[in-house]
Amino acid sequence: MSRIIITGVAGFLGSSLAEYCLEKGHIVTGFDNLSRGCIENIEAIMSHSNFEFIETDLTAQEQVALTFPSADICFHLAAINGTLFFHDRALDVISSNISMTMNVLRQCLSTSTRLIFTSSPEAFGLVEHMPLEDYNESKFPAASDHQRFSYGATKYVEELAMHYAARQSLDVRIVRPFNVYGPRLRGKKDGQVIGRFFGQLLNNEPLELHYEGTHTRSFTYIQDAVEGIYKAGLLDVSLKDGKPLAGLSFNIGSDKEHKMIDVAHLLVRLCQEADVALPEKPMIMIESGHPGDSSRRTCHPQAAKEHLDWVATTTLEVGLQHMIQELIQEVSSGAR
Ligand SMILES: NC(=O)c1ccc[n+]([C@@H]2O[C@H](COP(=O)([O-])OP(=O)(O)OC[C@H]3O[C@@H](n4cnc5c(N)ncnc54)[C@H](O)[C@@H]3O)[C@@H](O)[C@H]2O)c1
Image (cartoon, rainbow, N blue to C red):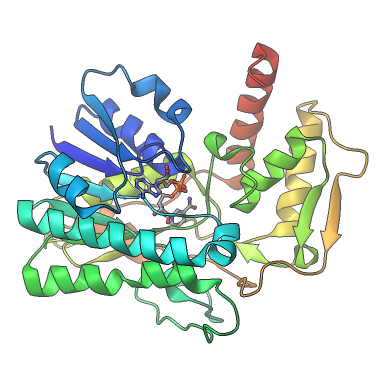
């Protein structure tokens, strides 16, 4: 049994990770300021005897020092995430994400707590070559073009995590989830495409396809992503060679690449099969999107496969079916 800290616990990934850690018998303290996450996400675990929730702003260094309990492992997930914010709130994204990461790194160093830093494929910037390797080079366009990479820059501070691992002997590991989706993402309009699609379905609006649906992504079902992140944190040594995992980076993503137009067609078909009402015109094409959007993104999760014995196993079709079933249940129970 480990004592685990999860920052960003009320968010999409953090809440599912907390549930999983509790199921495995660990003691979890979760932190969030509820700016984007919500209490509903952690309602089911609030009364769990091994769970404590602390509402706090992790950008305040003294709060982190005062409130962090002694722990074995810290999963740092708190961040301002969501594509719209990268452009509209670049200053908040940069200052919050970097100060939180600095605060958490310092605290983990002073308490010798193993740290799992949740980075992102956005840490690679705008790279043409696909799939993205665990140790891919990063390439960023000029900051004067747009602020899309305000968020990617705060994930490129993997540099900081590596500094703490190499120079201060802190056990830091990096995980990069690739387009995670699942039931709690439904309806979010400010972020990931599958969440937006479900939001549009709920409002009886057509699915909006930017760039006429030609862009691609690797989509990773929440349960798969949580298992990968958990293994990256809980394993003491590599399953490949028995060596420490400190300083390693893991792409946590499916290696299947999907075009958005195909995702939309699949979702429409699955909704029809499940008798979910669709708007008369189920999708609309839009020529543009956010400046700086990568036209392709796909994942090569080699290090996770080798060192953690982890691969994503849920197909997009099965993952979307889970989301549709949850949607139907909520609508029929009157929760929506
Ligand atoms: N979901 C994905 O597909 C994906 C992909 C790549 C990387 N990530 C990373 O994984 C992590 C979790 O992502 P998510 O999808 O669950 O995002 P999310 O927005 O649902 O969760 C982030 C949480 O951090 C909290 N937070 C923000 N600012 C805070 C502050 N100042 N103090 C305390 N809490 C604060 C938010 O309230 C939110 O609950 C993030 O670091 C994100 O960058 C996610």
